Each structure stands twice: as C-alpha cells, then as structure tokens.
Length: 507
Ligand code: NAP
Image (cartoon, rainbow, N blue to C red):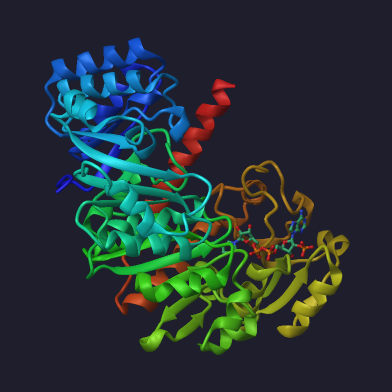
C-alpha cells in the first residue's frame, strides 16, 4: 500500500522556510505529504530544506518529487542533480520518491538501485496536453524494466468522459494513482479515491496542477477521505462554478446531520458530457446554475409544472433508472425570504430585471396573490414577463412617481466587484421593503440607500439559503439544518470580505 492516508498534501514553495511551514500545516490534516523539491529556488535551497527535514524527524509518509523541466516540473538541473536530491531526500526520511518515466528511460536500473535503492519508487507519466489514447500502453511502459512499487498517470482531461477513463483505469490495481488534470476534473479528483486511486493530491497553498482542491477544502468541506461506495453524491453544475457557495452550504447540511453524502461542484461546458457521467459517478441529484437553468429542461424526463411555467430549473433529482426530474426552488427561496416580512396577497411589487431570477420572483409573487410590475432595460422582455404573470410592465422614468409595497432587484447591478452601483436612485425607492437577490456583498448599495430611508431591507442571502434548503429537502426527504447551512455561508462570505479588505489595504 502506498500510504494509509490517501489524501496527499502537496507542499511546494520557492524557499525552505515557507516550505517547512506548509509541511507543518499539512501534517495537521494528513500524514501523507508530497515534497515538491523542484519548486525550491536552487540546489542549495533543496539541500538546506532536506537537512532541516532530517533534523526534524517528523512522522509521516513523505514522497519526494524533483521533477525536471523536461517532464513538466520546475527543476532546471540535470538528471544527475535530480537523482542526487532524491537520494538526499531518502536519507532525510522520505519513504517514497516520484520518478518520471522520462528519467527512468535514460538511467541504467543499476544506477537507480545504487542511488535510490533504499526508497520506494512511484513511477509517473504526465500528459499535460491531453489524455493518451492508450492508457494500458502507458501502464505497460511504466512497468517495464525493474518494476516500480507504484505507478501514477496524470493526464489533462478536456471532458468528464476523459477523466472517467482514468478512474476506470485506477480500478485495475492497488497501487495505481490516477490524476485527472484540468478545470473540469475537480470533483473527479475528489471521487478518485472511491474508485481505487491510491492517492489524490491536494496542495497546502499553491496549486501545482489545474483542477486541484486545497487540502483544507478537501478535508473539511468535501471530507474526501471519507467518501466511499455508500456515500450519496450530489452536484452543482454551472459555468463558471468556482464562485458558488452551494458546496459549502450543502456539505455543512450533510455534516450537521451526520449524513454520508457529499455535494461537489462541476464546471460544465457541455451538458451532455455531464449527463453521461451521472450513472458512473452515482449522482443522485444536482443543482443547476448559470448558464444551464433553461437548457437543462430539454434533457429532463419530467418537470414540476411551476418550473416549466417559469422556464427554468435549478434542481434535478435523479430517479430510479436514471430518470431526471426538475424543480425550481428559487421560487421557494423568494417566498421564504418575503412571506414572513410582508403580506403578499393584494400587495403591489416591482421587479427590476426580466431574466431567470426575475421570472422565478414574478411567478412566486403572482402565485401568492401580489400584483406584479416589471421594469427592465429591454422593454419587450419586461412586457413579455408581465404578460406571463398577468402583471404590468413599467417604464424606468415612472418609478419616482409611483409607490410599491416592495421592490425586488433581480438584476446583477451592485454585485461584486461593482459594489458601488445601484439599479435605482434614492428618489426611486418609494416602498416599504427592498429585497435585493444579490448576496455578494450581503449589504448592497441598493440596500444601503433603502436603509437610509428607513425602508425594511432583505438580502439575497435569505433567498440563497432558502432555495438551497429546499433542494436539500427534496433530495434527502429530511428537514434541512437551515441554521448550520446559513452559518456556513455567512462564514464564507465574511472570509471573502476580509480577504478583499486585506487586498485593498495592501494596494
Ligand atoms: P439573467 O438571467 O442574466 O438576468 C439578468 C437581468 O438583469 C436581465 O433582465 C438583464 O437585462 C438585467 N441586467 C443585467 N445587467 C443590467 C444592467 N447593467 N442594467 C439593467 N439591467 C441589467 O441573470 P439571473 O440569473 O436572473 O440573475 C440575476 C441576479 O439574481 C444575479 O445578481 C444573481 O446573483 C441573483 N440571483 C440570486 C439568487 C439567490 O438565491 N439569492 C438566485 C438566482 C439569482 P438584459 O436582458 O437586457 O441583459
């Protein structure tokens, strides 16, 4: 067995001090650590770091990597220099060394025996451009000559289909490490251990390959080392998806209820590629976000009538036989955010925007008995939405002379990074309540202007948590731990806001 702790922390820095700090952080989360010696600035720094490692006598399974530039690493030296440092690393306490096939093929096995014989060899092949067409052929080449103790294939995958080929390959043996690289592979990396990969890599600080999840996230958000065959898999699909707080929210819900379930973000450029992977990965349900909320409809076997009316689906349940059933919980989110605050029946509500969120808001309000007014920069879109909910469209220049029970912003105006913008001016805020669907930042410029006029304000956070909780309940048939989910989202938003402040002050 390569290592008992299968999440391998990647420690990589240009100087030995930060490298040592990363190592200490890594050992708090896992006992398996890859030391990227090739990241260190020069030969002296590598030797300096390894001397410190030897003196520290740390307990863990360390894999030394000193990948040469020719093989995609950062080490500028010769093969002799590479082997010298790997030998130093073994003397310093590294049980394993990673040696790329390019080096192996240029070294007599006897030389490797003499220099590195006390260590265990993880022989690796990297394909930075695309998947090799013949994985078995690659494996055979890796096993040629004196057999390594474990092999690793890392390949750039342009699609989920490619990355699943690698996972299937990992099922063939015990000591095979399968590493799909690339933006679309993040969830597959996390699921690779379940499929039999001997390791998955997670950087402590700097990503060393595209698609990596940080060690902290892998352990605390996704609990990647706990994922097994019984784990229920849920997903969110979108493009982009990196900004989504849904994984933090849903996983906090699963952890609070001690459920063996995980929720993973999928960057999906091509819906068909994702849909084809559902069966293999065992996905039981997924959230849908921009830009797939409308296009997903044509792939569903059935759909909640209201979601069909809205024309957008943000929640899919995978039923027996792989049948897909769609819902729209943005609708529920709007209701849960507004209903406790104002009586909606017979109220008059202005919606700004006529896109996907505006449609969910408009149908929710109309269903609750509100008179809906729509104001959007494209009049035709505003009219069409108003017609669909038996409301009226209203021109922007009328707003300062009109009064509403509530105003809902369903445009992205004011969303991070354009936080100083507001979709309306103070004179146009003639209402009792303002609800901004934006939740980054939590307090938008629009909400600030409203608060200054003593108007009640509701943040998009309420809708976000409510729509997420509704999804969670649809999938699990249990009551969602809303307080835990909300707390996790607020904490993440606070962290984001703090790091933005730090960046601003540094500038
Ligand atoms: P969308 O489908 O792209 O619709 C955006 C709408 O805003 C369109 O009507 C668009 O007009 C209008 N718009 C865009 N930029 C504008 C500008 N500069 N001035 C005036 N109007 C502008 O997007 P969406 O999915 O509805 O999302 C809209 C907002 O809702 C986002 O900020 C999102 O964060 C929020 N949202 C929140 C939640 C939640 O749970 N809190 C859920 C979903 C969405 P055109 O058609 O002319 O481009």
